[in-house]
Image 1 (tube, rainbow, N blue to C red):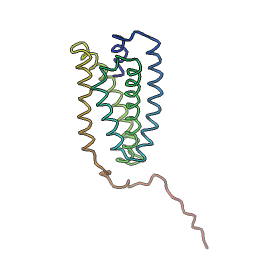
Image 2: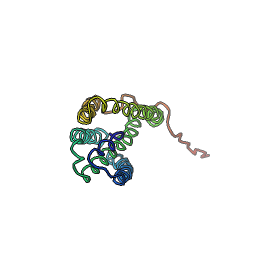
Image 3: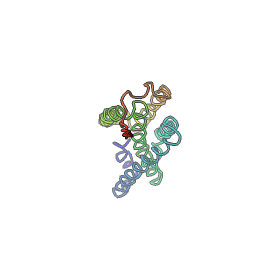
Image 4: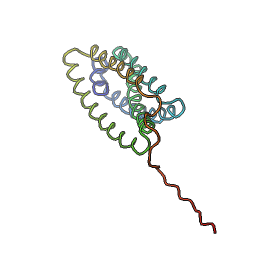
Length: 180
């Protein structure tokens, strides 16, 4: 939705200063949600936090069309959506570390992060094509419906790492055993 929120909102709200404020709020919301979701993940685990993110995105996707009736509601919904996207990024880092271990998790996350960038670029293209063909209502319904696939994938994720502890230790312990 990040790619089209201004175009969508401008059909009823014509105020460039308002959209500048939304951008600022989006950045702040994303930063806070990255920290908040990571902290919540430490306490409640990945599945519960990610489930809350996906369910909130599902509700936002199905109701976003109606938020432009009010500036406050539009600001809240757009900032929340952008914040949740930031929360996804921070929780995926922790998940990669948990599933693949510290050494391999960082490598897997770098590939995952690159795929998120490619996915974002493709979503901008998809949204542009959908918007021209079906309009905002259907586009938001398609985007929201994609969350059902994410919920299914979340359910399929293993609870624990399918791999045992890494064969190589991350830190090598040196023992000072120079006793006579």
